[in-house]
Image 1 (tube, rainbow, N blue to C red):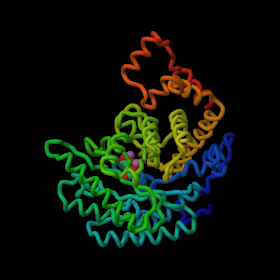
Image 2: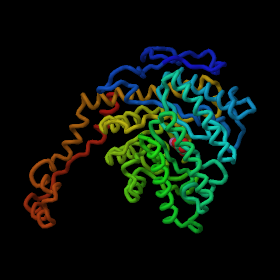
Image 3: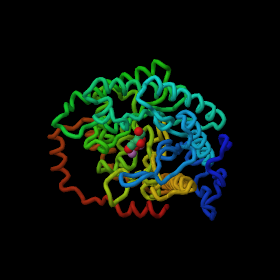
Image 4: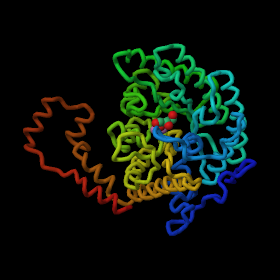
Length: 442
Ligand code: XLS
Ligand code: NI
Ligand code: NI
């Protein structure tokens, strides 16, 4: 992939990041991510489908509730919104092509600043869509997914699709229409709904049933529009239990799957699982992945990690090899992502202020996933990992156990079997053995 810059080079002094192998001392090289290396029948690039998130990498400025911005970019200085947005897009494509990654993701308002004028916003996004088309053609970078930010503008403080005021809901519809148009025009592979404020702060003022019905109606309306425009991609729901609302309706994978089933949306929608959202919901990341895989609904992943010492969505870059090996085991066994990939929904820390830090952050995450893929593939191919789990259920493979699975035994039959066979043996779950096995392959 060629490196694409605009008139100005924003990440000066950093060239394209190349694979140099685990022995290299170069911190600006990949040690494990070798894009064209084949693992389990596909290249690493095809397995992992890495995407750079526009919002954290090119819009986030390091500000927090206690302090002003610390990430000062020189692509933000033009007065005209569209000119400023084009500079930002130059920086984005320079960065993505320097990392040699295949995808990016955006919210509408990441790409260009919005005002409160619907038609003007549409024009702005269209202008940047045309610009992105040229950038994509020149670089071969593709849009993994687009989305609309339905949570930052103050009109959405009580929700967007679940807002008690229909007038606000209509604005959300207008915004989603424009974001879908942009996603489709750019050949976007998927479209995401993350319902940041689709939930409640207090049940005292909330008709939960009506709000959830409105959410389902909104998703149908958006899906029908996109299909009419020829969109063939997948729609993703990104679960999160809370933050910014006290309770978000798309709480976790299981909740979302049953919501989609209840409202007849299973055919068009899959899940985009985010690591830090899983842990906020009181689950492990692997739990959320497994629930999605078991339902045939693992669409995509937002990669990041939380902090063990505090509760919120810290969106740090992933670096935990154990966690990711366990994740890659599930993803590989589940047959990979349906439509999606691995989007770095992660931000460098407020005090990581060098342009280079943005590279280190991504390189670290990319290499940890690539290494996890290799380790997981070896575990599946060479170890007893799968066998041990299969054997644990062997009593259901034949005889009465198999008959029971097929629905052939009654409660009386179970009683008879229990009496005939006496007390069951104590059988170990061998958890520590398996944990050691994972570490042995790392
Ligand atoms: C926030 C979400 C958000 C979505 C896209 O917590 O992760 O960034 O991925 O709207
Ligand atoms: Ni996310
Ligand atoms: Ni998040």
